[in-house]
Amino acid sequence: MEINVRESERTLVLRKPNPLRFVTEIKAILYLLPFLIPFAIFYLWPVCRGAWMSLHVWGIQGMQKYVGFANYTKIFTDQNFYLYVWHSFYFVLICAPSVIVLGLILALIINQKIRFRTAIRSMFFLPYVLSVSVISFIWLRLFDSKYGPINALLKVVGLPGDIHWLTDKHFVWWAITLTTDWWTVGFVMVLFLAGLQEIPTDHYEAAKIDGAGAWKQFWHITLPGLSRVMKIQVFYQIISCLKLFGQVQIMTGGGPGDSTNTMIRYIYVTGFKKDMFGLASAQSIVFCIIMLLIAVIQFKLTESRD
Image (tube, rainbow, N blue to C red; front, top):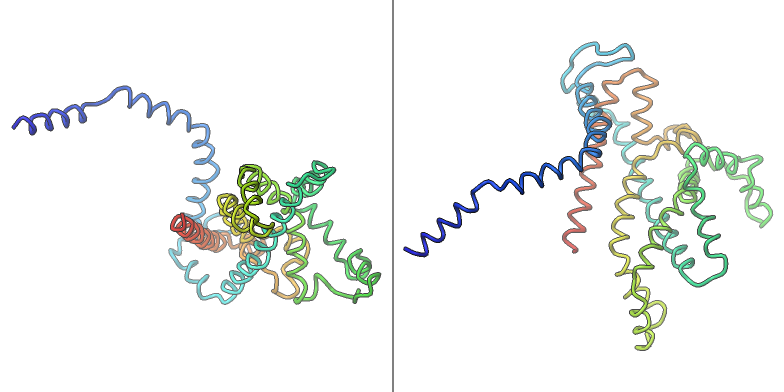
């Protein structure tokens, strides 16, 4: 009986309202408001507005009529939708691994005690601060098939120098990948460099004493130490590559033919070229759901490994 009385007293104490806890929660909400207000205005509201537009025929003059899910039906019966989704994922497959590997190699080199380390790091990071339009116009000139420096350099070293980088479907994706890698590798390098500097040097000293070579140190110390940074890099690069637009729009215009059209450009053409903003909104919602599913899958995979 005494035990039951004590338990009931404890439950009564726990159920009593705690004014200090309520004040703490209010303070926490107030601290979050500077983030929540812009987030609601510039993210949640446009998403909700886009979802509403996707249920209508909507042109540049505004809403014309309500069509329900007809826009979504039109998307999934359009063969171009599946082609452009594949193009977006194809770019992920060739660009994300290459930029991550290059960034890791550069970080490993710069992490060593070499001369002009700060200057080299700044040199590789500098392109990342430029806009996508500037980067695209630079490489548009470099890849020029007649007067571009890249073909001229290939001729100097004895290789074929008449490659049509941006008009040949066999080379165009590699040209866009090279452009994107050069633009973003500095950011990847800096993140990996920060991760490398957090790995205790004692681990490497102990490995050297045990006779471990450079490869074993990299495989058993460096890579496990960079696991958290690697997860962030993979997640960020996949989402970033899926959002490819500027390079394609400026350098190829989706060509040759339809070979470099991606989902983002598909949405842009539907809305701003064809004046079908309702259908473009539906395409945006579908693509947003695809990216959210990829994010959830990545999160679940990394959570299970942890």
